[in-house]
Image (cartoon, rainbow, N blue to C red; front, side):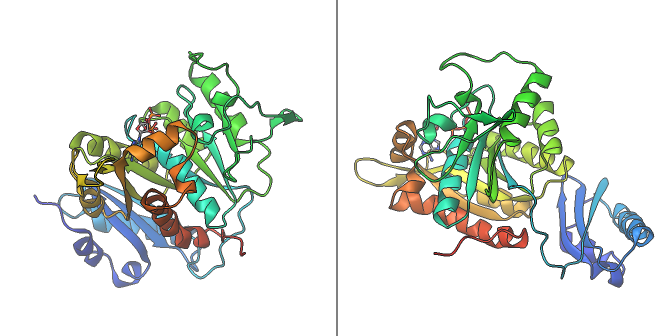
Length: 336
Ligand SMILES: Nc1ncnc2c1ncn2[C@@H]1O[C@H](COP(=O)(O)OP(=O)(O)OP(=O)(O)O)[C@@H](O)[C@H]1O
């Protein structure tokens, strides 16, 4: 039995149901279907879901159908209550998730979005170094913390601000969640978007975290190597299991820029993440080259996105791609 492409699957739905499809994705035998539930009451929605499942499960190669029914397509976007949570995840460590989180936050801030950053990497916090506010302690009022300002217009909260430098944390699950709650439920004021640098991997801690502090969307970062890509698709499953929309994939460390001659070579290959995004029917959000200037800037607390030139542009391009989605969530950059 061969799996059917998503377009063929759509044909299997009755016309009135097909007209309500907002997105339909097939990966590893699992169909993820988002339907527009405009004008339907609870029973109508239940019938829509049951009908779609029955029609699609009959298709060869489909083992599971996950259905999400969203509100009226024409309804104005709801005004977000607190900051909108945007998670940055990866299937494995060391692929540049923290680098992307910091620079994406700075790039969004440069576009006029009020952005905050939470370093949820409890065991290996790196944001205080990346955004140059290491050693500062957050103040607190009514047992809630104030984020620590950074010189790049992005306030930050990280375990790195709470523990002594270099002290490893050996905490168990509940303590980790408790610490994370404090970082997220802080005085974020009029922050519009909270970027969360998730810990690497796809374990229970990550799942609990995304279920509890439900991100409005997630970005997955991967290097172009096959193994990293396989891990990235696990991260995709994590977000799907928590019903968090994945906004797209970012390829990091693609194409090595020689610091001496500026020539670009491809030690890890190039384009594999974009191909994977196509295969998974995910948007591809952009590519960040493997560039010594990115590592040196990051180590020195000077995020490349805050500067000028091609490194800054790589992150700015990714941030710009997120603006239309942010608008659908009621977040528009401040003018001026
Ligand atoms: N595009 C890049 N070019 C050069 N160096 C990079 C690039 N992206 C990340 N790095 C460097 O790679 C190392 C790992 O990056 P980073 O800490 O962002 O990864 P991570 O996925 O968050 O890792 P961890 O899971 O361990 O926190 C850092 O030294 C960082 O400066």
